[in-house]
Length: 79
Image 1 (tube, rainbow, N blue to C red):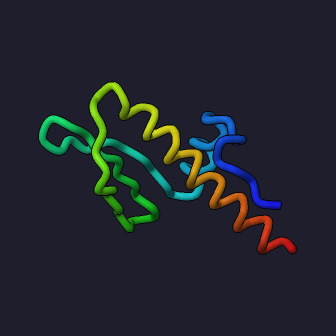
Image 2: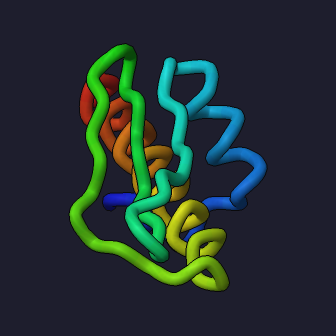
């Protein structure tokens, strides 16, 4: 069974991602912001932009998404 991103505590997600070389930050694009992910030197900046009051939520969702991706990969490798 795959783990869903919404089921992961944000603090555990950040710790797991940081240990695995993933960092999530925001980048200003005009008056809006977008999410930037550094995955072990491979940087991805997402095209979708959000307003300043929405960026924290977007960053949390991104941390959780990458943590779920790591945990699901570890589960598949163990099986």
